[in-house]
Image (cartoon, rainbow, N blue to C red; front, side):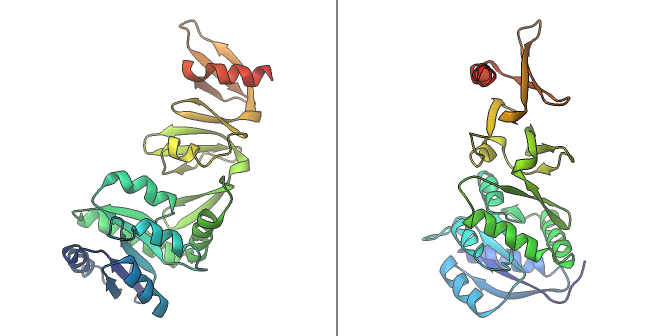
Length: 253
């Protein structure tokens, strides 16, 4: 997808990293480099003087992390889309916590870069920048616990109200947010998401599942000694030995 008005910037403290990314972006017609910066401070100065659509942002930089700058961008009404660039895959979850559009691992892979660029172009073409800005703002300035979750898919961002979630199921690198209307997938680790959920509303019952407390209807024991939690409706969720006591306490109450 080509759009002659798409402007991007690169923030990386290492010159080879900036050069490699700049050269790789030359293969994508219609993308114009607005500026390069070797620190978050210099990027902040440059951003004050121009408007860009996409920011390639290194996570690990001296003095100030790219994660901190990304959170700061959440205060803007329409922040640029953020694609993190990192040498460490462990930073991926943190990247999505601040609503990065995507993340790229060093050394850069041309196919992954093309995928990130296409996702950004689709989002911008669909005029979703405002939705992205609201999602980022809600994360950085919102309450202690999540009230909504921004689910990103190709070309769009959808908001899932936490109040509508019945239970949550881990599925690889994603979680399925089970609601009455459907089960959208959100890319985050279940344990990481749990940290942002109100424990008065949600209960961990298994390494792969979290349930809304008010949805718990009953607990049964299978012949092999395993446990299953029956939720209001038809859903049945496994319960591990570790969490049985908490479930029984809830049912007793």
